[in-house]
Length: 219
Image 1: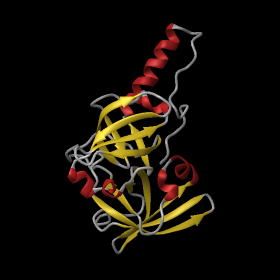
Image 2: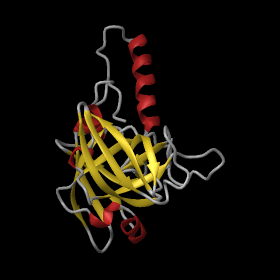
Image 3: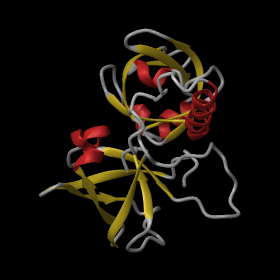
Image 4: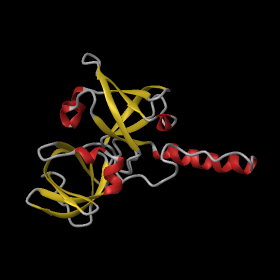
């Protein structure tokens, strides 16, 4: 479990192909201070399990399913990534409840440099989980939705303050970049519960599922 508050900008040191995915070596002195084998670290919003951690760097194995669903399939040596350790009990929840299970990707369209208002295109099947002033996780960063416009693709916007741009990968993003999206898990649970209630009331009605068809999110 994470909060969507990035702890540091890490650097991809190497990408090693594996039979069913790839192994990333990432430099992150802050998140490796107490990291050990089996710990969880969110990399651009994707919850990954630490294989080794030493000398200020750690390795993680990324399976093909995660690569398919996330932008990690595009990372290369030298690229900066957002890092956050799993939340500890008793700490402040500065962002919102983030699982690190990516629902899909969106594409950055444009940013108003004066206001920080940044818009993204995303699959229309995910748009119904977003509401004005609701929470969304983009590349592991907890942000507030400003507005949502339905369509194909759907579009939504968030407002980025200078601090967010400075401390995360948003300061290096450009139009056309692909980003990881995790919608609010509470919205997904509500949809599932509502669908079950509707099915009981209307046995012949078709089931309601999101864009991922009810499959497990990437991890």
